[in-house]
Image (cartoon, rainbow, N blue to C red; front, side):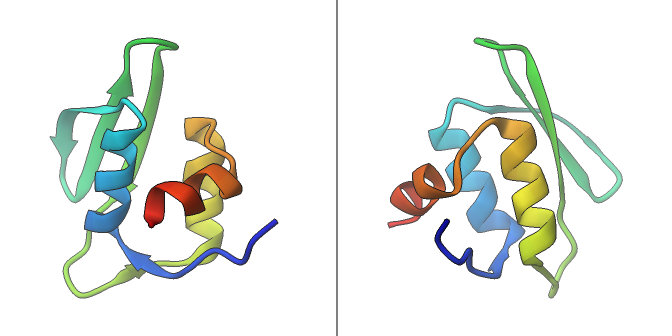
Length: 76
């Protein structure tokens, strides 16, 4: 498993959109995304000036059913 980077929420949102997720709604500081194909719902916290840690990133990718290898390919 490749070492995942620490990145901003906006960058993760772009990758989720590449993976087929669409923004469903915003609840406070959390953006909720939905993928119709498999009916998955993902929540991404967006806090100005704060990055997403590796643990949170792994959790979001697991919920989105995106492998770390696939994520790294999308990141490039």
